[in-house]
Length: 336
Image (cartoon, rainbow, N blue to C red):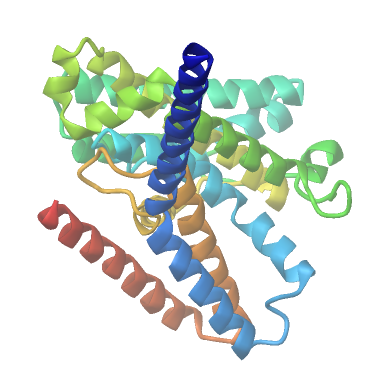
């Protein structure tokens, strides 16, 4: 009789240990999002009390449509910042992608799906070049991406000599207009799907753990057998490809493509990731926090518009929020 009792006790202890491990994993995940989540809740409460339309379903759906471009770009930027990098070229790559797609699909009458795929490949190639500059040429990420920002913006302008491209197929524009099931556009669905995939990779896949290790200490990660160079190039390629996808999404929303698209978007993208709790030093952050950061920026802009705050004042408010987020990251890094 002692053996069955002992076996049952061991099973109970194992189950209890598994439950504690699962609970600690949930706490670890939640702890990284607590600050941004609290900020998001407080912002929503404030805007709900000061405006009449903020809590409406229509306004929420409008905000989701508005943050799609920023959300897709922020996912890629999260990966870059996790490894201790930065990418200032995402806004320019967005414009390049839109112009390549528009030029091939509209001016050259290529099948539009092929034009989209080529635009994404060109965007990813920009990321590969950036990654090679960072890894092979040992250029600081700030300088490498600053150079790519200028190169991509210049090529985007050269394609049509600075002229915009107007008028895309109806099915393409409808991707950002028609709400399926009454609330979900294809573009918003794409953003959510990409976010879920990125979250799963970072939380449960070896590649995700490798990115955190590289961000924590690249040399230690290399000694542990992680191919730091390959991961770095891949991360910049993914970030650029997502920036290119954001350009496609924005063109669907605007029904046009122009070389000036995405100006200043790199700052909003970095801000969303940092507000979401990522460290500019690398090794800290995640998709959940970035999602909260994107929503904070989206709701803040939306709420300021509802309050009829001047666009110039809005720039000041957004700048203050970014400064506070970066200051909090600096303080946290020093304590760490």
